Amino acid sequence: MKLLEIAHSRTGDKGNISNISLIVYDEKDYDLIREKVTAEKVKEYFKDIVKGEVVRYELPNLGALNFVMDEALGGGVTRSLALDKHGKSLSSALLEMEI
Image 1 (cartoon, helix red, strand yellow):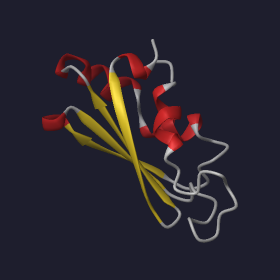
Image 2 (tube, rainbow, N blue to C red; image 1 turned 90 degrees about the vertical axis):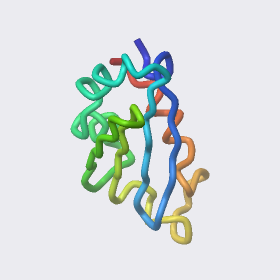
Image 3 (cartoon, rainbow, N blue to C red; image 1 turned 60 degrees about the vertical axis):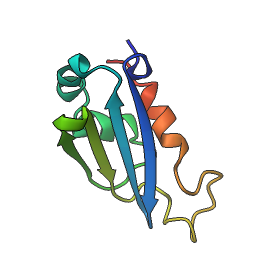
């Protein structure tokens, strides 16, 4: 199953840091994503993009996980030559992850 079947996502950025939230549609699926979508798995999934640490924060009252990924935006908006300088497409990419 892909994450997009049970969750939606948003992305933010600050400098060279990308922040991705993963929010379940139904609270019953929160424990599943908490178990399957670890910081290590997200780091591996984005290994070609994320050069720094990935930290996961749990927000059980919201049915959400928040991932903060250091060195993920090619130097940041003012320095990157990437087409998606803000990393907004990373949320859609995460939703394609198989769990």
